[in-house]
Amino acid sequence: MFKFIHAADLHLDSPLRRLDLYEGAPVREFREATRRALENLVELAISEEVAFVLIAGDLFDGDWKDYNTGLFLVAQLNRLRDAGIQVFIVAGNHDAAGNITRSLRFPETVQVFPAGEPATFRLESPAVAIHGQSFATPAVKEDLSARYPPPLAGAFNIGILHTCAGGREGHAPYAPCTVADLRAKGYDYWALGHVHQYEVLCEAPPIVFPGNTQGRHARETGPKGCVLVSVQDDGTVRLTFSPLDVVRWVTAEVDVSSASDGYEVVDGIRDHLAQLLPEHGGIPLATRVHLVGETPAHADLFSDLDRWTNEIRAAATDAGGGRIWVEKLRIDTRMPVAAGTSVQRDGAMAELVCLFDELGTDETLHAALISELDDLMRRLPPELKGGAEAIPFSDPAWLQEILTQVRPLLVRRLLRRAQTDAD
Image (tube, rainbow, N blue to C red; front, side, top):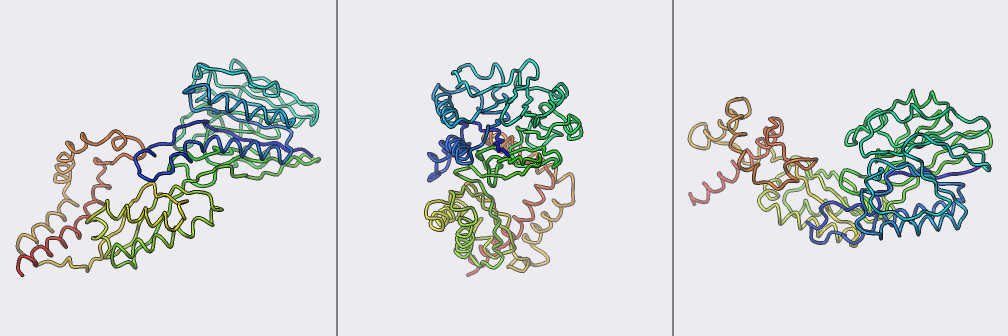
């Protein structure tokens, strides 16, 4: 029996996105998180006495800012060397040849696969053959695995490959391949990289994405780590996912239907977040809070969004003893239908309600409203114009959802104003 670790996508010293925008964000913890995750990987390898470590691409996040990134990596590789653990690496799209202008010599126990053609490294004890090829350029579009050599007789054969496999949302379509083609190679294990979510594509033989070692933004939620692979004497393989992350991104959906005002919303979120920390083993959490439900508190929340966002951040700090931080608040609540939205059948208020109804069904009015929003769209910061955080002004479904939320809130405010004027 022997053991090895399969890791990928360390993205060492990758910048954590947009942290400087938020007061109280754990900036220092996140800036050091990818390094701490690598330290955890090394400690796991040593404690488990693994025979070797595989890193299936993207050690780095592109060119180093300075040599400190390389010095830290070499120090960790030296720890593995001193423990008698070999390391095998393929370069991925982020650390392909030409992407990294600086370099440092790795320990003699580290083997990096060439980029020109596949190569095989063989171990005598245990009897293992590892086949792989690095990226020559940042955008490899052909199936690299097609040229990988046949398995070696009498050895446990491993293919290590940086690939999108059949394609994954949010990941560039690099080195595409199919599960059927990988199985046809006859290898005993495929160590894949590039996709940042743990996934077993096939069990016989195991074809595995370990995910990245540390989540870097709000779309990389949940535990991140590596796979500890145990190979039994009869050749059977056991996989154990081992978390390595030191700060974790999570999404918390909280139903606030029972809340009557903003304060009760905050209390409900505090109770919900207090349960998250033990669920994740006490690891610090960067949390995206998503509020849902039909609640009278909808009006409170939207009347002073900045205030309630910071009330919720303060409640998170209290609930987690400083170990929970609210990265973003998303509010998808609604006003109850009967919450003061009835209006007379005539007059200005009735005309307003009719206008909302027409906006939901009249394509011409809909298009005119989208056109009116063009100037606002041009004034938005870049992160709200493109990417995952973009506001989809031109999406009719999104606009209709906004109109549905705004209608009862606006009617209720106008009714209150009219009542105040009458008094």
